[in-house]
Image 1 (cartoon, rainbow, N blue to C red):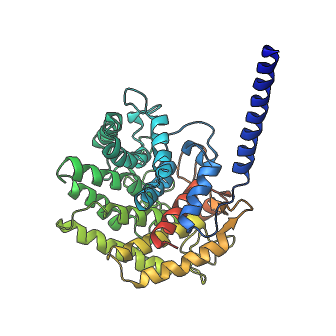
Image 2: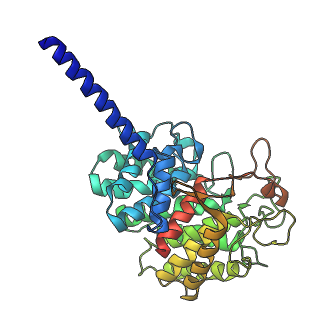
Image 3: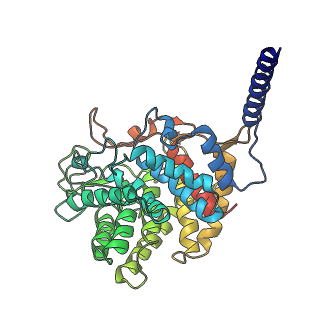
Amino acid sequence: MKINFLKTTVVLLLVFGCKTMAQNQAEQDNTVISYQLKWSERTALSILSKYPKAWQLDGNDKPKWDYKMGLVLSGFERLYANTKDKKYLNYIKEYADEMIDSTGNLKKYDEKEYNIDYLNPGKLLFNLYDITKDSRYQKVIGQLRNQLQNQPRTPSGGFWHKQIYPNQMWIDGLYMGEPFYTQFTVKYEKGKNLDDIARQFELVQNHIVDKKTGLVYQAWDESKEIAWADKQTGTSPTIWGRGIGWYMLALVETLDYFPKSHPKRKVLVEYLNQISKSVDQYKSQSGLWYQIADKPELYRNYEEPSASAMIIYAFAKGADKGYLSSSYKAAAKKSFDSFVKQFVKVDKKGEVNILDVSSNVGLGGKPFRDGTNDYYLTAKTKENGAVGFGAFLLAAIELNK
């Protein structure tokens, strides 16, 4: 009888235990993100729900040290700073710990690729090291700085985008490299390389900014040898909306760490004002920006969310920091509302979805990407592209709406 009683008790405990777990799972599945929360937290909670591991962003099926994760998680870093909610910090830390082995080396990382994109997620490690004092993070920071030290350069001193793209500066490379470079040289080198950082932006102004529109092309080949390069200027053919966004992000985030006492800081602020004034003239009636930024009337051209959210964020942050006039903050608020109306879909679980994000585009390679208008306009769009999510998260945090 005693044995039977014990068996019955165990069975009942298992049954009720299973019921409780099932009920808990059902409760989790039915959790609705509150509409009362700000867009920033609604977006971050949506990302946590859709992608429990940060490396899953953009539909990745295996861990990857990737610039897109760096963009999205920089939003989580800011959100943690604002809210002190540990789940945002833990999401960043779990990604770093997935990608860095026990000896402090990045998994599947090859410095000799000289891929400047690899620097962007490295920005997250400064704060992680300061919080945890885990020496692995500091070691990877050093590895990435070493890559930059050896990064090939154009004859004028601009960083190549990758080893496979000789003598080419890409506009997104300014965002990938300069905020990390600036933070490192200020923190560990007493700012000795600030002039070199300013030089990268100066090269953009001299060679990648279109003299007619004031907007930026995606890339510049100083040798003018690659097939997509203009034989007179070396620039790629098309002014790409997201390329403008990358450049504006590079400026506002580099300025976060550029000392006020340095004479080149004023120059960078002037560059931000120049590009902001130019890009403001090319927004749509609703306050958004196009895939081909300077040709809104072009057949099949469309308002693109990642470009729009990046520009909104840069306008808002630039105004908040005093780099831009307050009118840009007002413009950012208006454009943000249009963005939500056009690109944000909230589902039954209260999760935020970003519609029609342009897929990744590039230049050269095999098959050869010629950088024409048609190439950009035929790039597929998708829901919840990581760059769209990351840019919207940053804009939502800055505007606090």
